[in-house]
Each structure stands twice: as structure tokens, then as C-alpha cells.
Image (cartoon, rainbow, N blue to C red; front, side, top):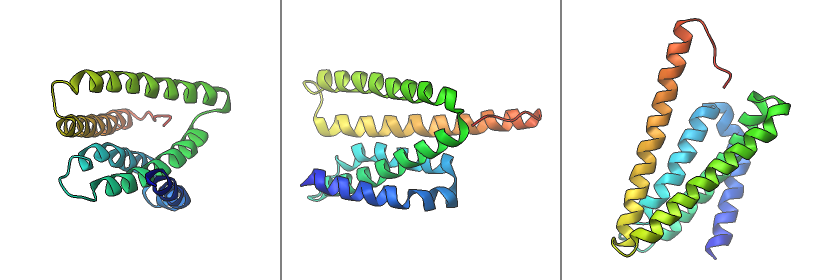
Amino acid sequence: MYFLLFTLIQAVGTRFADKINRKFGWRKCLFSSSLGIASVFVLLTLPFNYNIVLAVLVAGLSFGIFYTVNSVALNKHISSENRASTLSLQHAITKIAQMFVFAVLGLSVKAIDLRNIFLIYGIVLIIILVAIYKLYDIYEVENTKFGTETQY
């Protein structure tokens, strides 16, 4: 049932991703959808009955927007010769990160309550995403000071 709900909401996110992308730009869309995905961990820790449904809705919408906008941004900003390598590298980094996250999760479950682990993961992911977004802004400002442009 949750997978069906997730898939339907992801389709809605995919459907409206292009309009959202045109309105806000791909960087803000990717950042916001990434925050949505990270916030799912925090939503799972909330003490009310419908937190799983809310988490599935947020995750589905965020994934639908993220994957669509990510594909559009990669197709627009990366040459066709480098696109497959970039997608492979992006996928590899994601899988390596998942491996570490699940390993730490498995080791932590014996010592810490699962709800607290999800809360810690959510907060850490949100902090990392905000730091990356801010560092990119600083990098972009520094490059525009000297008259250079970034490729992304």
C-alpha cells in the first residue's frame, strides 16, 4: 500500500517537476527536493499516527522532482561525451554512501533507539545539504568576482 502511494506521488512530482524547475531553477529544485528526502528521516520520528504516510508523501514527491530535475540539469550542462561517466559516478557515490549509512545504522540499532537514529540521520543530512549549498554559493561568488564562470 505504501509503495503504491509512493509511486503515485512520485508520478505527480515528476509531472510538475518541469514547471517547478522553470519557476525556481534547477539548483533550488535539487536543493529543496534533497531537503525533502532528508526530512523523511525526521518525519519518521514524529510521535503521531500518520507520520509514515506523511513521510511516504514527502519522499515520493521529493524523489519525483529530484530525479527529473537532475536528469534535465545533467543533460543541459554536461556534454554527451561526459554524461554517461557523470551518471555512473553519481550512482557510484550514492551507492557507497548508502553502504556506509546502512552499515552505521545496523551497528547503531543495538545501542540507540531506531527513532533517535533516524532523527540524527535527518539532522546530519540536512546540515550537510545546507553546507554544500552554501559552499557552492561562496564558490560561485568567488568565481564571478574574477570574471570566470562555472560550468554548472
